[in-house]
Amino acid sequence: MPPPVRVTFSSGDAGAYRIESMRTLAGDPLAQATHLGVSEGVWQTHDNAVWSLRGVSGHVRYVERAEKQRLAAVTPPLGRPEATLAALIPIRKNEAWWNLAQDERRAILEAQSQHIAIGMRYLPAIARRLSHSRELGEPFDFLTWFEYAPEHTGHFEELLQTLRASAEWTFVDREVDIRLRRL
Image (cartoon, rainbow, N blue to C red):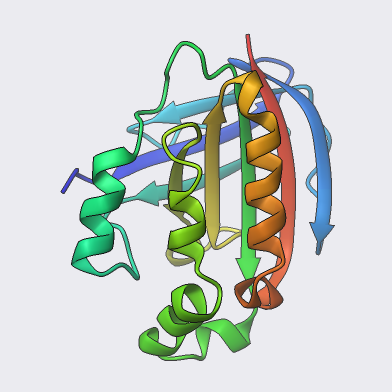
């Protein structure tokens, strides 16, 4: 298992990614900005940041051993040269979600929503890393980072549409969809 990775997403007027769009799907929006910087390994907010989000990626949660092995076999690394497009989608789930026991959340996540199975259909074209933020007191529970090549944009949109139509998404009370292009 890889060690946990601290990550900070900072927006402002500089960064490795140009923000092409920011769309609020639920809850409060984030302030508009033109660029996004990503710092890994440390929590580092860029000078003059408009907003900054922190998270930690670590062990994969809610997966069974066979699912974890299948995911590991086909999950591409981040930073592939051809993956010039990215998306940062921070989400927060409501208290009803967090009041469920872990087995109940797993049942909604996979048995009902098929979250893992859906994601597997888009690997290795779309790389993904999930960072957890709830325990850090951040404004979102999860920071989902995606990277993909321009020719896989349609697949990415299909992935999001399918996930957002699932039972799991009825628990989302804040979501911002930020689309990016690597400079």
